[in-house]
Length: 434
Image (cartoon, rainbow, N blue to C red; front, side, top):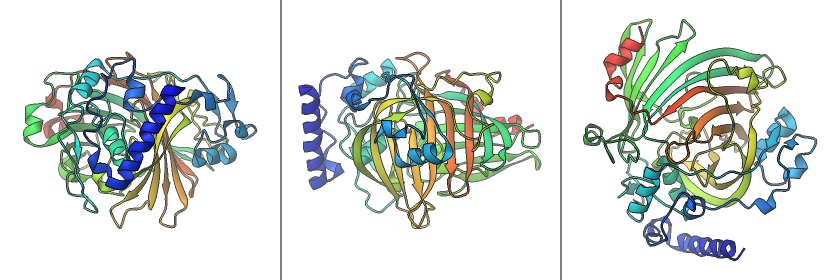
């Protein structure tokens, strides 16, 4: 109890300093902290959940009939999904998650090196310097530090994932279905697990942080449509190519133009993974540190034979509810507003898990300030703690105003496989499209 009080007091005093001096003076304040280990990861890089606030027992299912039992352990948008759209939360016990030994080592080695650069209203000016690898800001003191921790969270150095996408209407059920593959060198620089560490020289030379190739596997008329793109170390739009099978043509393209819809779904590009944009593009206000019910041990079974009908409640209205367990998690609550005047969202409330710095939940508001979309992301824990990251399990984006949703089911996820750099080429993109 005394340790928790001390931790809370330290966070409060640091928050006062940030409020007076801004987020830009806090980079070195934590450089001399004790060594971070797998055992103390949660308390050193974020904070532990307050399990004394959780009165709901393991195995209990929360529905609109007993929602009062969870109090403020759920966000308002999730409460709406339960009360109006019949979402049910099956409660499980909290379990800690920590990253790979390499990521922990890099976090210790590079503590205090990352410094935030004040960018003001500018969104093309780079907002961070000095970051090498690992978590930039253990025990973050402001929203922008949380945002950079999210940007450089532990995802492993590469990932090869297969997923299904469902377009679902509350009135009509499943309307459309597609299957995709997304292979990515998630960390071409700032690497911690796979040689070369900390960077692949060719990527470093051209200032690319990561590379991705993604393409449709089904249906037949969509098969082969794909994209190849590279994320920059600068806050610019993602550049790459697309392949259009019907035209048998590769075209240069700028990806993720802010606010553009992804693949005619209910998501914009920045909604992917919770937030796929740059920290410099938004204003990040830390409004709270809370213990809330989120899904970080979803238990999603892999493989096509593990049918989506077992994961989503397709048969019952509104046809989009996921059937995954929720647990008390430590989260940073961020109010996020765009620096772009033409952005479709007036603001977002983003919940960032304080252990993994993944985003399990998000709310987006329209220009009138009304709740527009709710995003739920459920993760599987690492296949092997200490060498692998958490895995994406399912993701649900609900457009509350049109009562329509887009669902993602990740049927296979492979991390740290040392993907060959040769697959991230235009010739391979064209080959995959045939």
